[in-house]
Image (cartoon, rainbow, N blue to C red; front, top):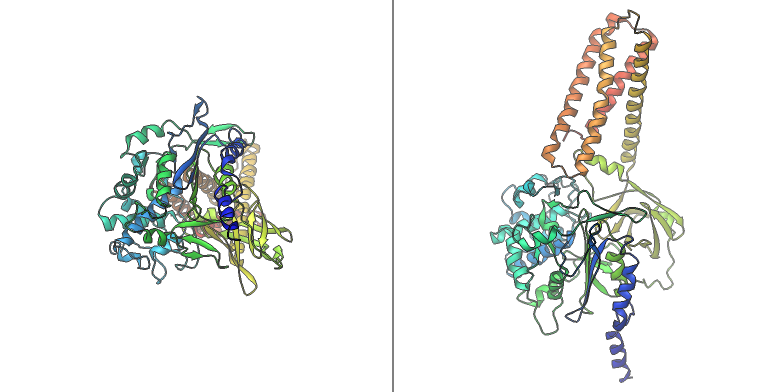
Length: 604
């Protein structure tokens, strides 16, 4: 028995947690990548760390498809949200120095009155920011810009983009770029230097990361800035054709949340510092106790499964894995490591929403999670049937209309399978589901009194749609359909009548003229809202969108004028029954549009 133990240990050391022999791993990774490169992924860098050394560093595909410029190990990629790990590392450095406490109200570290949209008395702590459960809504404006000239200092960006607090801290997880950027600003406040300078001094310089920048416009690293122009971000069509994303070059206003750009070897230096060899101290901290604290579970799902470790998401594989994925408009990445196994995988791609490599390769290396179900009976998946909305969404202002459009359904297709928001998920343990696509997302179900309270994936909870929300959405659809169709139909009829009677001397009443003008004006809100949505999705700043709000205000004022005119002239003309109904419906179509503008806050 004593001789058997080292044999097992040696075997484990010779293979990955998934069971692949390390002697075969390079071939297996190449084989796996070949299924995606050139078909669903334009280009990628893949790097694997084992026992403190780079075990594999391989490049695939093209940085520039049209000119056949290949990806190399010197190619720089956008990190996206993997950048957030630099924020949490910076925070823990200050914790180690005694300058910051994780359970202290963050307003202690902010200027007086900095946060103006807080709605709950409970304190917001740094742990809430790390866990993304401070209670903030999502914002769609001023995160990305098309021009570097629009970037403002971090404090100014936080004032511009401050979201409303819509949940009590600690109650709901809703991924928050604002919360991460706010943590970066707290680092600025405590160190009295811009966040990018702090990271350059205390992380990049310490680790020798000369080919990485976190500056929002890359002004602090000309080499990276130049290299960034040599790679394009792509989208891929259903038939496998690659086209450069129209927004492939963007700049991030809340830059601590996602603006790092660099080579994969530099990213490996950061990962290696998170897995120091036995007896060695991480260069990022004075004492490894701080690193151990950072990588200790600090948030769990309601079923007790680990969810987050001080900003590092806990992945479900055959071994304990820390991970953080990243996406910008045209780049995808994933940063995963198992400290226990001294094993790490980094994937960088220049592909929008890439999943096959970013999420598939870690599973290939760490192994698919398998729950120990034993003799437990699986609950019937029909318990999940219903409409849900993602907690990470806008609740205030004009963008909350997107939330109504993003409501999805969980609908059981079998006793253990559910169609959720267009993806198929399967129950692998009681109230634990996994998506069957490349993302391999895990969903944890929380019950309250026998009903589903929420369904959680790592970055956001899904909440049931209330009856009131359903009624408002149904009313909105009916009101918008009635106003739009009625306006078009009546305008066409009036236009045809005008042509038929063009030779007849028929004079319309005052109300007829105002009705025609009102119906013509009804078209403006529809066009205005469509343009507003288009510009918002194309990263136009909030200040540049205000013209649309003024147009909506002008429309509301004009409808009010029309109603006054109708009231003053109604008794004078005494319209016939059919005409009277038409007048009422015409003005009702405008009133419904006004109600929709006010209901969905399309005025700010």
